[in-house]
Length: 310
Image (cartoon, rainbow, N blue to C red; front, side, top):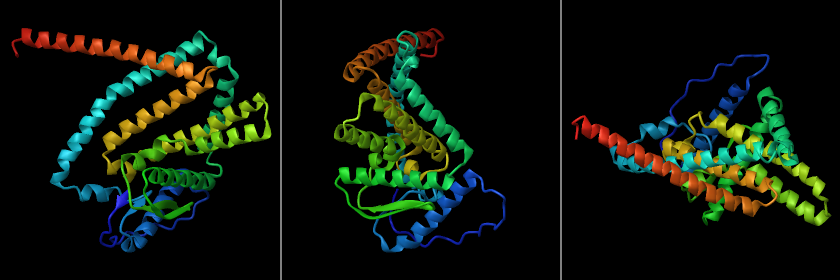
């Protein structure tokens, strides 16, 4: 979130210093968020603008002005218009996946099982709490690197970059909706793993059997991205507040569905052919649901007229 300098942070009640046998994952994450927020705001007085990974979301609500309502209305309208696209895309994906699973035995394929194994390993590891500090640092690093990459893509400048197990932030002169939300739909470590494997495959001349390692790695990294995203979203992320929570959540959902569609198409033998087939089926489903919506709307209008309300 890009924040302008503001008055010093008000005094906070000190946290209780309790000795416990084991700190839960939620407590460790919450404590890291608070420390990162305090650290960023202590330095915030000397900066013109700052994107902070974690901040007090209540500040955005308290500073809301009546003039913000037109902007909020536009965001709500845009999010509502995107909902049909989310529905059709999700329906098409589930339809294609079920067809491939039932009729084409996709669930028996090497790609599916290695990807699924990697995903299950990461889910189990995540919920076990093992190496939670390492996972926290890795997530923060990927989160901030994604912000930084998109700032560069939009020709912005990153003047400071900080990452630790206690949180992270970047200082930048540019922000927009894509920059703010990019870590929530771009599986950074999946992209890194894929690029590294492509370079290694062609430079070392690895055989196609090594592709199984890529499938497993993509399962681990993509699931890492998803479980952390789902974990972080309910915790009042200022990235979402900055552009409206409703619009941000719709865009995050839609973008993640598109990423999942891309992974599914790439797992098939003819990725480009599958992408084209998916697009054609998407158009068919869009036409079908549009026709159903029009019929339902006309039927409702006739019922209301018959009831004498119009």
